[in-house]
Image 1 (cartoon, rainbow, N blue to C red):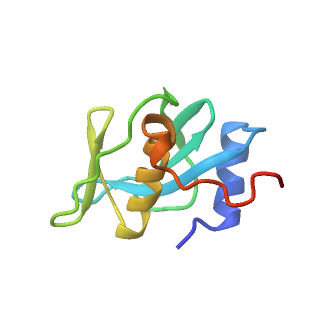
Image 2: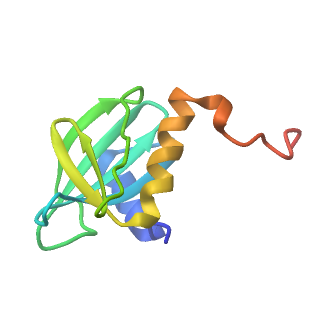
Image 3: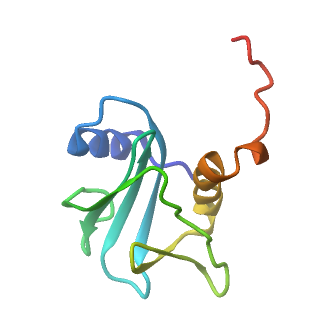
Length: 120
């Protein structure tokens, strides 16, 4: 399920982003607890904490990393989890493709599908 537009806009406003958000997905600290939103732009990966009570209200910037920082790999057993910046996060399975696409865009561009309409 895509991240709802209102949450996308709250993150854009919270971070003061003028450019495009390339990827965005929610995650939690492994084992439950605090929620996070990963916002990936052309320049950075911003990790926003939403706290334990809300999954859709940005509270603080947990960290900001260069776009060249790898997110994955995502471990899929017993659930979807990945290590990033020294912490382990878990997420819904539906967002595995988002993490893989974000990493492929930087580290394996040839694996991305070709644009079917490059002249548009």
